[in-house]
Length: 299
Picture 1 (cartoon, rainbow, N blue to C red):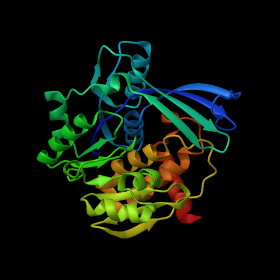
Picture 2: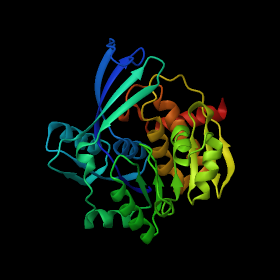
Picture 3: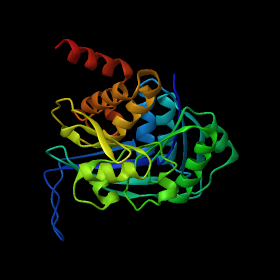
């Protein structure tokens, strides 16, 4: 099994299903409310663990029932939580509107995720990993420090640049694989087209996988598009955490299967996940994804 360390956010998702987004000053009725463990870091850790990886999670929670619930979720999926610290700030939350067509809009309140501590134990965990997985729901200075630690130890790094923000060249130089969605890619590259964004971003150092939902994954290296991987057909119920499901499946299988097969595995996991409600609650197991891929190979 691949040893994956995820440094990232842990939130409780507060999810409202509704027909549409309200206009400014408008009140509308929702049809359902649920709470689900989430945060891009927790989501990617759960997705990787369910895909068969040996996963450790480095994060921060508050001294509250929400934090205890998130720790329990990680441990239920067999994830090492020795690096999940309790700090004197409330656990983070994400406020998610899921529309009837499956699309979503999200507001995150970081809470404990704003902690910037990288301990010696964290550094040791990173150095012992096959891959370090990060996002931008933790402070950029923490992300940069972890990336530098991984690069010095020869550990592969995978970064999801969300929520999107400007990234300096010296930070991108430490990223082996950058995985933005198409909206994040164009914002990060400051261009108007996802393909051009992939070229621009890959010219700055990392291999770039642009996830484009039903239009598949675009792959760029060294300033050029090298391939694309078409999406699997799916009838979406909730697209929340589809990108995180892809990343978890991809990193869990990359070492054993190779790049192209790992991308297909991640896409298959995401295709299953979007047919289910919730973030971590929607993520499939390795057996489910293997069965899905086998059915497509023989169908």
